[in-house]
Length: 345
Image (tube, rainbow, N blue to C red; front, side, top):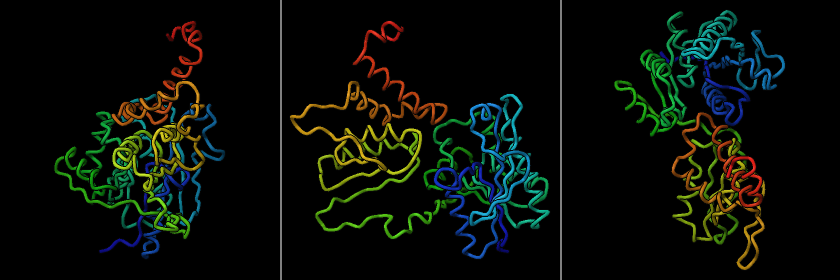
């Protein structure tokens, strides 16, 4: 029997736009248009450190909040007071998700199917719901952590359990599907890409070429973070089209290394980082006024291409590592005495 009522549980769902979870919402909207009854359950965790940093929005807490952003969205938060231990986040997320699911069922009835976006930790919540209520779930995996080898032993244990009980396993790229099949022998993965959102349907989303003389433009739209491999894309484009003035590469998106990629793009002909203008490349014979230390960005491009920053523990950590190296390089060129006086020579 085809399920008509589905509840989706994303592993993260902040803004429901862009990398905050926009593709979860886009898929839910597509299912609604196909005649399904769809709701989103969004458990979330925060810590005392988040509170101290002012990163917790007003109104968050254990009370259930129901929003409607085209898709009914049930939210509930949990304050994590337990020290960092194996299984901690997964257990608290699942506890929060199970309680949120119970509230939803009391108001709307039980769904035919649960969809978990990401094994960690939405899949753990779906696994717990199935164990408690017998409702089947499907797993849609989005995470790059599998390709980066960042999972800890207890996370791999949880992923095996989630995969083992899932009705179907989906991955958002064929490469990820093949990788997960190898990492978890016996599992079967199918490929279902994330849908393009309504922003891509706008008439002016992709400008058309006004004449055959206009350049051909490749556009990459993604979160600008180290694991996405934009630096390798820039380098590959330079190898293939660097001497062709009629071909360009345009990067669009937001993320922790947006500014760094914008600066890297200055050193490649035909590469544009949007939005926002880039400093002009000096013409032949003109002085280069981009400032001391900028030549090091060429070496950053090679480091990024070789994956030097992709093993950082977080995206913000990778961005800080790049910025730190850039800062030291500029100080070394502009004020070496300062570095020597502070032990950085």
